[in-house]
Amino acid sequence: MSEGDALHAKEVPEKAEKSGLLIQADESTKVYLRRWLMLTLFCSFSVTSAYQWIHLNIIANIVVRYYNSSLPGDSLQQETAVDWLSLVYMLVYVPTIIPAMMLLNSKGLRVNNIVGSFLNTMGAWLKVGALGPERFPVLMTGQVLCGLAEVFVVSIPPRLAAVWFGPDQVSTATSLGVFGNQIGVAVGFLIPPILVDNSPNITDIGAGLTVMNYGTATVTTVIFLLMLVGYQAEPQIPPSRARLLARQSSRNQNYRQSLHTLITNVNFMLLAVSYGILTGAFYAISTLLNGIMLHYFPGEEENTGRIGLTIVLAGIAGAIMAGLWLDKTKAFKWTSVGIYALSLVGMVAFAAIIECDLNRIWIIYLVAGFLGFFMTGYLPVGYEFAAEITYPESEATSSGILTGSAMFCGMMLTLGMRAVSCHEPRQHSCRTALGRILAANITLCSVVFVGVILTGMLTPTTSHCARSSLLASS
Image 1 (cartoon, rainbow, N blue to C red):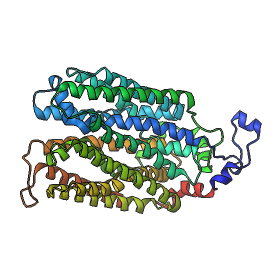
Image 2 (image 1 turned 180 degrees about the horizontal axis):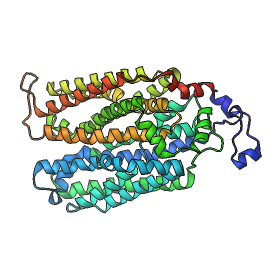
Image 3 (image 1 turned 90 degrees about the horizontal axis):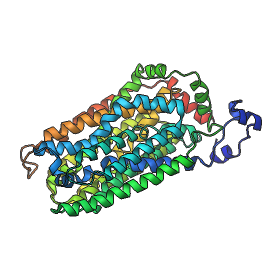
Image 4 (image 1 turned 60 degrees about the vertical axis):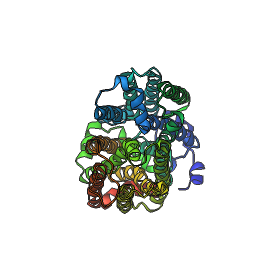
């Protein structure tokens, strides 16, 4: 059913609509125009959440200098402490995702987004209170609250798309939902190096952090108030037959039983591990990008932020194109394998070119764009593939498990890369012995290669096509 057809579909009788009763599927689907408002509000929340994840790590060297008096004395411990400003998002996600998903399944999208937006706002204001070189523990506490807010963001796009969007827009809407998160990462890469000057004067750094933190807190407060006033849990009439049947089955759905069904699904668990590896690799690269780039290009904080921006913007284009492609083809497995393999090619190229010391930073931009297009473009593909092979289980539950896997892998890969790459004199040529940063990049590429193999091992059967069939017939 096209959007125009859906918008003019036969209305449910007023009495049935008011009572909340569902009638025959072909007479009870409707796509509402306000779905775009729901998506916009969610994306705004997602932007600020993702921004707060990375905005301190992209200026990690400046943060270390400013908070030096409240950080450990050893340089490795200082760098690791700042890494945890990002890693804490991954740490808090794993134990809290199950209760967060239970809240989502029982209370719906409105409560989920209001709670998450509130935590995001409180974390931002707590970081305002962390302004001062002796207040790193307060800064970390603020990041913990922001990390808790992220639990209510990253696995929501496929659920929001299924609840609000018509059958020919589900994958595209999921991509746009992920797009909001990626915009936040992009802004987090771009803005902090501009606002916070890499100055030897602590007062100058504090002034930049003040502008940044107060600005963030103000924006998150406005978004929270808009969410409180304008967000609706779900439409009165579902937008597709697939959502209609999922709503009916959810009335008798036991969350623990659903969780058990997912973790005993071999194809889904293979996908969860492979998704975790690639997305975790993106988290690791994002967290450590400041250290990696400044190792090869000292003093290039702003270019480092722009390279991170390039990765994310290219990924946004990749995510949108992947969503459009899936809406038309439903070729989930081979799209996943292709994107995954090309992400590996991008990682190998990035590791090789940055080590070769070509002294042409524009080449790094090109390779970073290629890497980002496929690596971050894979995010909505993984979510939609999971929803496809686990239907009619809740999209929020499947995406929550995928994201939990990504958070765990991201934490492990980041800590591993930091341990391997720290304190090594710079290598000046591809012909010299492998430096530790190169060794860390090679290890990361090897892990992603394993992910390619796992993705190729997926064997979705015709029974997994029920969701696509229902969407196609809506």
